[in-house]
Each structure stands twice: as structure tokens, then as C-alpha cells.
Image (cartoon, rainbow, N blue to C red; front, side, top):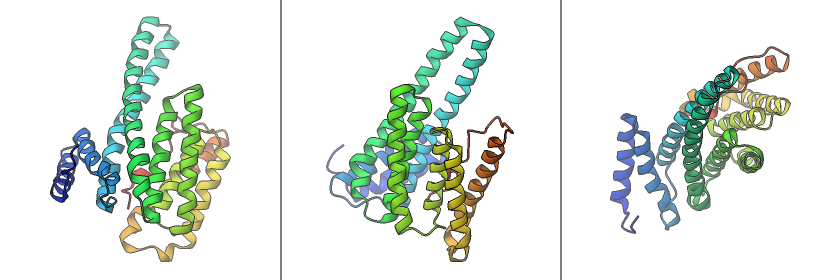
Length: 265
């Protein structure tokens, strides 16, 4: 990357990222937005809301595809293991490890950008919450496929980032703000899936939902759709988790909806 990444080059990269998104070429979208994001540690202004959202969408899609692949391959591996087919289990395991390496590379890449560029350059409370939430999310994704000490380390860093985001959100953002709601949603999923703490997950989700309901009349028109969608996801997860805790097992009990289902604002 050269120092000649001026305004024109930045605008071109953003436009190419938009084209790549429309073409569903998310690896290229990541490549373009990565150029823009890396400039924030070279004295340029922090990302605009549009740039921030493009970066989030790009990484969310490349990681999302591989998370889905990992779940499918892991499920097949379990079935082959139950059948006692050691040869297929070995092939499956090798393939799963390949996907895990891709997951690891993507997570480490965006986490480095967050730590070196985006979080240090963030000025507004909204930006800080957005980036700390993102940091919590990608450490959570690492924890999903890691084991033992690596899983513990990723979980601890995810928890720390989510807590940092929550502290700022509670001070700087209203309960109905889509980023604050998305944070609560993903943080509660973290408690349920990674820390196996359904009580804490339900408590956090319910508090966020109730706080938003209490101030629903303050909801701005531009964020109404996003906020109400995330509130619905919070309620859906609460219903799913409480029924699971009551002994009604669901196949997807651990796969709660995430705040990224709605466009970040």
C-alpha cells in the first residue's frame, strides 16, 4: 500500500466495494474496504457510516459463508463417526481443518484492522460501540471452532470487547438505537452459545428488549425498520431459549439470530 492513497483512490475503492457487493463477490469487497480501513492509521479521517457498513457487510459475508460450511462439514463428520467409517472421518477432518484455517485467517485479519486502525481512530460513541461489538463478534467466531486454551482465550477477549461496547452504548446510545440493540443481541448469543449461560443470555436479551419498548416513542423514523427487526430477533431468541431451558430441545437451539441480520446504522 502506498502513501498516495488519496481521496480519489479512496472513492474508487468504495465504489468498487459497492460493485463487488452487487455482484456478490465478497472477497473482492473485503479487499477494497480493507484498503480504505487501513488508511485510518495514516492520519486520515475515520470511516464514514457508509464505509463502516460496507466493511462490516464485506467481512460478514466472507466469514458467514465459511461458518455455514464449517457447521455442515462438522455435522457430516459426526454422522460418519457414528457409522464407524474411519476413512471418511479422516477425510472430513482434514477438510474441516482447511475451513477452520480460512476462518482463522479472516478473523485475525479484521481483528488486526480493528485494533490497529479502526478502534484507535474512532471519535464518536456510536463508532466505538460499532467497532468494539465487531471485535467481540470476530473473537466469538474464533471461539466457535476452537478448543481448550484457544477457545478460552478467544472467549475472554470476546467478553472483554462486548463489555467495552456495552459500557459505551449505555452512556452514549439510546436503548432503541439499532447498534445498541444489535450489540445486546450478539452479546446474549455469546452468553448462550460460547459461555453456556442461558440465564445470563435471557436476562441480557430481556433487559435490552424491555428498555427499547419503554422508549419506543423516541425511535427515529430512519432507524425504525432496523431497530424493530432486531427487537423481534431478541424476542425470538428469548422464546427459543426459555423453551429449551424448559426441556423442549430444538435442533437449532444454539443458533440464535444475530444483530448483523439487520444493516448496521
